[in-house]
Image 1 (cartoon, rainbow over the protein chains, first blue to last red):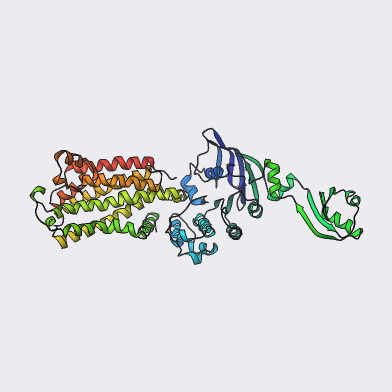
Image 2: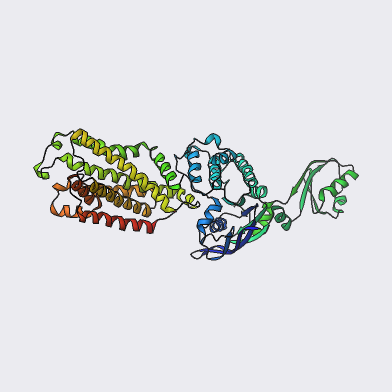
Length: 302
Length: 246
């Protein structure tokens, strides 16, 4: 069942149309990603879902509620983590959690939540003294303290170092395990690939594609590239004769074979027959990055 | 615990983590009273002031100053800084309502400035023999209206100022004329007729006179109560109208 429904969403700022006819549905329990370059309209889209902005056109329902008309009810079921929002410098972590939990009718136990988000040993620390990753974890905790059914997380790992980013990803998976549906805004391919069940790709305010990460990649191209260093001379013809192979190139001491289908099995079978050993063998598959370029005509980060 | 109580408690804790703000808002008015009271001429009846002692006149003026510290210096800067940093926007995604946010700020400012007022009255009574208000109910009404009017002006500054820094600047610019007309430099009794008439129409000119009248045992004059009420309604209404989360 769809817990979030967005239909033909349009949002204009003056002459500029930031979101132009975007639509998608998110099922209960999903991690749904909104992927796109900066300025694509991702944040505007989720801010309409959060009821922070009024759409110029279109229909939005979150748990059956209209975010503008039913704002008071929405606030009880939707938790939001915003880009660039800070807390007072001298507010302590435990005070922030206790304060935010007092806003809700039926909050979760904030101490247990702090434990889930690895914040227990930081409870007495002031906001200003937290690291970037700790601030993000607190921000996620505050989004979840009201026991929401839906959590919207906007660019939550931007500005974090790789380790902190992976820690946050682990946490998101734990949050989903609590039964929370997650709408995740990101411009990191790796993040989208790792976390999201399904993705909406948005570019210049329009929905470009919507699928699972693997589905997006497959839709674009199922070409693979295999590189290896043959242990002895090998006639290219034995490879090009294979139906799976589309091209064979030599790059220094290496061979680069491009093809489709079960390319690896086809090649290794031939090599075994020819008594050639493939050293340094690497399989390169189409990535979400490649898919993104194919869908939008440009890389996600300039 | 309710959001209002929790917010007020949290804001109060945060306030006490700013030593300079605590000093100026809580300790400065009583300290100034002690300094003024230790000048011998302040403790003598002065014919130029209608036979009153300087220290008697300054007690309500310092109480007006205590209110101003919170209303004009503390509150708008706090609020705009929260807005600037996105803390207000963050709260907007929760069920808490703006009126609760404002309510918590007002509650904290009221409780703390009332505490300072109590200290000023106590120090005045014990150290300098300043008589306690003879018309306590009138005094309370005058105090409440003066505080409301000033908080409303502070909230209006908070609503209009784009950044925490500009809120501080606007507060400082307002601070001096408001306290001038309250009589901080020239008590109202020593002002000329025109100046005193202007002072009657300012929130704290009216406020100080209302406190002074009640201290002497009279009920505050309707003009002064009306002036403070007017400021509260106009400034408070505009503050509500221009309130912004971000």
